[in-house]
Image 1: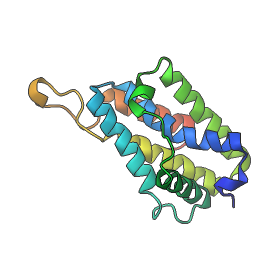
Image 2: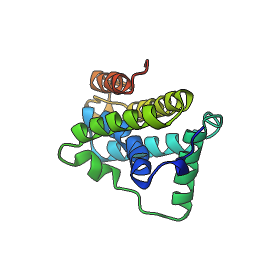
Image 3: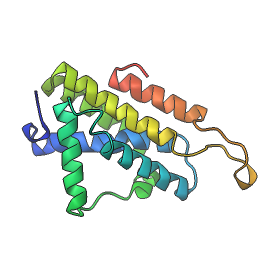
Length: 165
């Protein structure tokens, strides 16, 4: 059984950055207006923070959620999600971050903890994909909840994480 505090400062950075990476891979797959990107960032944050009950038996996920809650209470600076989503090469960097967290989890976490953390990352990415309608026409008419580009991003994320979607 491992908890967030069992990891080095660099490993903790990788764990935290993987949350953004999973979300950003979906956001950049189907870029929209900045308002939509803000909604996607909010969906990622609220899903991550709102998952404690579902992952109470996973000490690693629970302890990362606790760290996030404490950071929010202390009003620590969180990166600007819109700026991150618009930054050059973010899709590639996000994918690499997911590969890095998979290697870390497989090396240091128990198999159950690793599987749960990976499932949590996919849950966050799915919430981002479902955050708003995509491919809307004039005056917001039409559109779909999750478009093909977002589905492809979710499939890619699941593949990188080595889990079923």
